[in-house]
Amino acid sequence: MMLMNRKPQGVLRRGWSTGACAAAAARAAYQALLTGTFPDPVTIRLPKGETPSFVLAERKLENNAASAGIIKDAGDDPDVTHGALVIAHVCLGSAGSGISFHAGAGVGTVTKPGLPIPPGEAAINPGPRVLIGEMLSEVAAENGVSLDVSVTLSIPNGEVIAERTWNPRLGIVGGLSILGTTGIVIPYSCSAWIHSIRQGIDVARATDVGHIAGATGKTSEAAVRRIHGLDEASVIDMGDFVGGMLKYLDGHPIPRLTIAGGFAKLTKLAQGHLDLHSSRSQVDFEKLADMVSGLGGSPELLAAVRGANTAAEVLSITDNLPLGEAVATAARASALGRLSGQVALDVLVIGREGKLVGHAGP
Image (cartoon, rainbow, N blue to C red; front, side):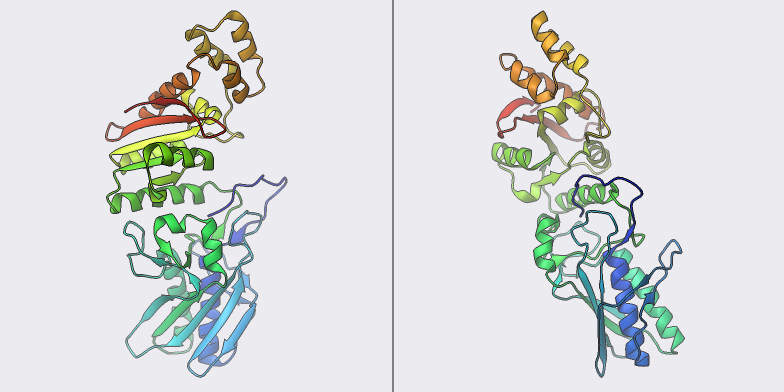
């Protein structure tokens, strides 16, 4: 999972996923195990045909096992695993055993259903498993042997890094996940966040959670948990991607959804925006003034709303009107327009101090 920091200017440098790093490390270790020599740098072929090369950060050759480590370079993406050491330990298995995957230190284990990997398995996603298998198959073919190996992946300090990801609430314990579909990290891509939202919904469905909440940030998350008595696993950190969450929920419904967010972001939703990021949508103060007018605001107040610098300022100067309730109602209507009726929905508008300023729905 990435951290949404301020995007740097200029052309951004792409990086490599943990899955790509693991595949390269595993290939280097297996080749050394069979030949006695580590390829450095080691080259792999990604699903779309790219052939990146990776410099080894560490290596170790034993009688029946070898390990290699690669430092992940996420490019210009603010990925929490940037700079992490990904280590693959490969040892020979018995004839006909094939390839098996295991979680070493800092790599998590799946404990809940709903993820691509079943409970009890190492949190190594299908994409990286396929990529590692392909790279090791090539090495086995080049050396005329059958592919019978055990692969253990580890990430030193991974358990600490994982606390900054969704893994704990998804039921992945003990460390990070080995992720990557294409092997490439695209800086500031929304896909990683959307993927996490979908995984959160999948886990909730698989564990029979009947009520989830999508929160825009920490303040709204704390508020919705307090108001509705939800545990951490029932809250989806949707960030700005309310549209992505609603789209996935429409096809993968859960009985009840609460959307919780700050006044400004939910004003955008009320005005029809489904991507709430400041670079992709803005509060329309003219429409906000129309809403205040409908609540009986004076001409002087309407002028102040139109001239306000921020949505928070509007909320502060209209505290004698139920503007939060009106925004919640309009935001709920906007969200319901993206659902086919299988999900019961309520909306909570949260003030800066975590105070409830508006609610709509059951």
